[in-house]
Amino acid sequence: MVNSKLESIISKIIACTAIELPTDVYESLQTMQKNETQPLASELYSCIFDNLDKATALKRPLCQDTGVLQFFVKCGTKFPFLDDIEETLIAAVRNSTKSVPLRHNSVDCFTERNTGDNTGALSPWIEWEIAKGMNDLHIDLYMAGGGCSLPGRSKVLMPLEGYEGVVKFVFDTIVEWGINACPPLVVGVGIGTCAATAALLSKKALLRKIGTHNQDPKARDMEIRLKNGLDSIGIGPLGLTGSQSVQCVNIEFASHHPATLGVGITVGCWATRRGSVHINSDLTYTILSHANSI
Image 1 (tube, helix red, strand yellow):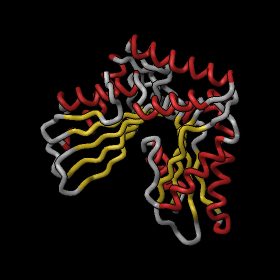
Image 2 (spheres, rainbow, N blue to C red):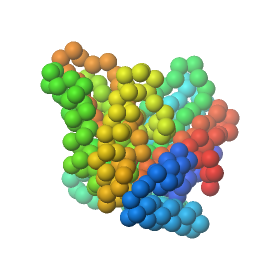
Image 3 (cartoon, one colour):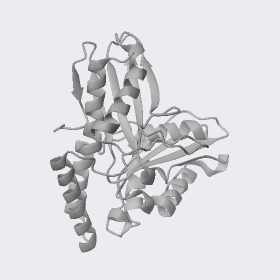
Image 4 (spheres, rainbow, N blue to C red):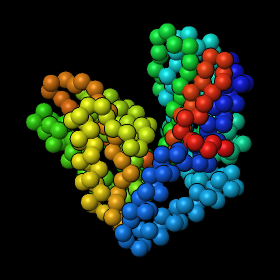
């Protein structure tokens, strides 16, 4: 059943994510504008911040493409409203489509019929993680726009390609498709056994805050090297050249089969719209992603 109080919380994080950038992304863009050395790129950053100011003032989505909503749910086995979560998420999406408003982006496969309320077959997408013994709920929301989804890829490398093959895959993808995703980009990279696990890990990497690094020292080193290398390409804001290309590169990984190395990449545009909320068992909550939430 739909829990009305929980729905109100989810609706708030949906609106917040659509209208305001998460604090770390906003601050990242500020730093990139300050460090930009090319005049055209610097002017484009000014346009970006003008867009953000208007969205906040008017309380309207900061991008006309509000994406397909994807929820990453970590729920304790003792959370008292576990049975209500899925129905409540769907109801919150349906209602937020009208109240925010959100563009109608859920289209049935094969019939190509737009459902008109951002719900449909496995839409919104819900990825579950169950935490044994805990009584609280953590939800990450990602708004997957059409442009930022275009560079998304995953594949399984041949055994001899190794980690050099991972680097080549990332560079080939960003060089070929990166300008379609409205740079400067947030880049998530996943490494695992198969294409499916690598793709999912790359999306989870995208949910990590800018400025954080993988705890594994070799993964951290690869993150830094990839960012520096991609910046040297000079894609710049909106793909119109500049001294920088990406806001960060985040890597998540899992153990893999000795004969295969899966790699996936998921990209967020300059307007990487993700929200994060922690909800206690009494339905008090804290929005973690936005310091000045609406």
